[in-house]
Length: 198
Image (tube, rainbow, N blue to C red; front, side, top):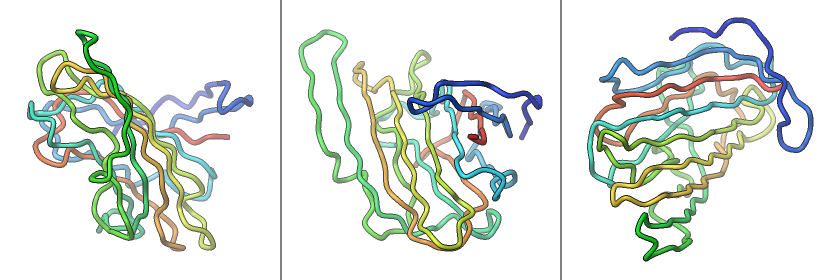
């Protein structure tokens, strides 16, 4: 896991001026089972932002979502209990279909499994998923751990997807590690940056 240079990025974040502090960078080597962030998630920041750029799956089958989970034991286990919601919008390349729908098969209801954040991702050479995930106050020992994700996959049937997932990890233990992966197959390209938000 590489680290960014220690520089600050001033951004207009959430309608207010903010600063992103670059903390770590995962770059796919072409055959990665997981992308693990096991250091740098602590009480230094109340908010962490993960940015996904061109995450390319090994399998060209829309049935294998891009997922994440949290850990409270430095990455020994990724099994935090979560409750979440997931919906998506889509639009075909040939302009013959567009829709928006709640995706009941991609949410969690007090479950410890990995949370789907990007669905129906194509595996052709030019297909990938990009987007962001925000994790709020992971080091709190009082409150649950909220997250919001928005990703844009190039869908396996040549459609644009806009995926929204949000929820909370139902734990008052400090979350200190996060893992990303495809539900099956490997990550075969792309980067994930982790930033602390001031």
